[in-house]
Image 1 (cartoon, one colour):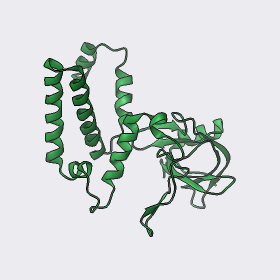
Image 2 (cartoon, rainbow, N blue to C red; image 1 turned 90 degrees about the vertical axis):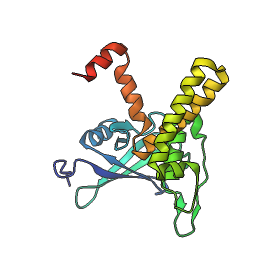
Image 3 (spheres, one colour; image 1 turned 30 degrees about the horizontal axis):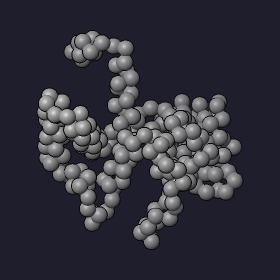
Length: 221
C-alpha cells in the first residue's frame, strides 16, 4: 500500500510502543516527515501548530526509534511501532492519552519534570491550552481571558504599558514582575489563535543576523 500524497498531503500517524502495545500519541506527517522517518529510523512529524517538521525528542531527548511502519487499508494513516525513550507526552506522562472521559479523571501520573526539559514558557503555553479546552464549569482567569477577547486585548495593552513604566522608572524586581505579566498575557493571546510560541522563536531565528533597520525595511517591500 502506498500513500497518495497528492490526495492526502497531511496524514495521521499513531505511535504505539512496540513492546507493551500502549498507544502513545497521535501526530501528523507530510511526505517529507514520512521519508525522514524511514531514512533516519526515528519518528519525524509535521507540527500543525509550529508549522514545521520536528523530530520527536529533539528538545527532550525522548526519541522514538522505529521498529515498523504500518499503513492502513486506505493508505491515509500510518501506525508507527516504536521503542520510546523516556516519555511520549509533553506533559511528562508516558502516553498522551491520560484523561478518562467516563471517569472524569487523570489516569496517568507525570514521570518527568517538563519545566526542566522544555522550559517554563513552553510548559506554561501548554497549560494555557489545557485551560482553553477545559469544560465551561472549570473556571480560571486564563479561561476567562480566552472567552472574552475584549478583556484579553485590554490586558495585553495594560501589561505592555505597565512594563514600559517599570523600565523607565522602577526597580529591577518590578521590571521582572511586569515582564512576566506581559509574557503570560502574550502567551494567552497566542493560545487564543492556536499559535505555538515555537513560531515566534522561528521568526526571531529568521531575524537573527539581520539588523533591526534592515528587518523593518524588508516589511515594506
